[in-house]
Image (cartoon, rainbow, N blue to C red; front, side, top):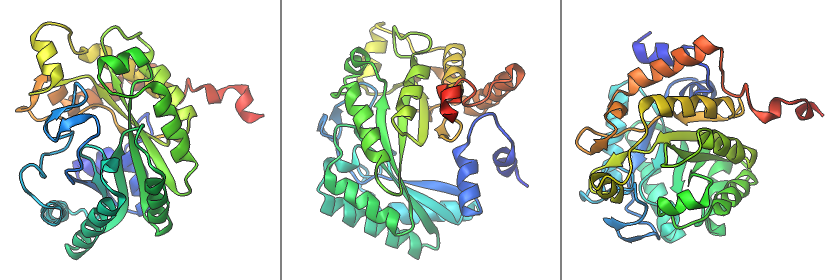
Length: 325
């Protein structure tokens, strides 16, 4: 068993998405991130405007801006997974917002990606879509149900970020907290479709338990997956400008870890934790530098939770007596 397999098989104090995928599909499953160049209704162009943390690549790897088409992205990334012994994947349409284009274009993009991945020799077991909470048309919901009915594992990843309207305004998100709650509730009613909420910790002036309370609320709305991210500054973003002007500081590792432990403890045990911290390249990351030590962070997080006896869901309000009524 290699190091990665050992990490997946270890009983960590949270419900690991990687381990859950392995249980469902019988082997390791990794995502292939696809950049469809869909744009965002909150941006003035593909490379400007939008949320303060969003870089010109729209949260992806910039393949579309580099002129790399859907088929080529799938071929390149499928080959890399196969070389690592990974034969199953979830195609993740990550960049920008998947519902910012016609559903005809989205359907065509997905079909091309599916066909190319299969021709490349990798089995697609699921689809994931990055979406804004205020842009979920009925036609998209119908497509999600159809993909799920075909036997694919289907995830809608919703940029919730925070459930405080003043902080959403600071992030320049362009939607309110109720939009996020409604989006998760709507998705939870779609047969076979699972929602994953993205939450940011370390926003200036937040209360110590803010991310934990948001995790609890969004899970009560029906989220079945969750991704936690610390607020961090990428090059050429509005946050970069504010940080350079001394207007705020990103969270320390200690602060974020404490916030994350509390959030995990209030996340119900059945919810799959898809991310504990953020990924950023050294070339793109401005601050905080501790973000580059992801392995150390996760090991320290596990050690802290084990030493205190904390586990995901041990403070979830559903553990009260009324949950058994």
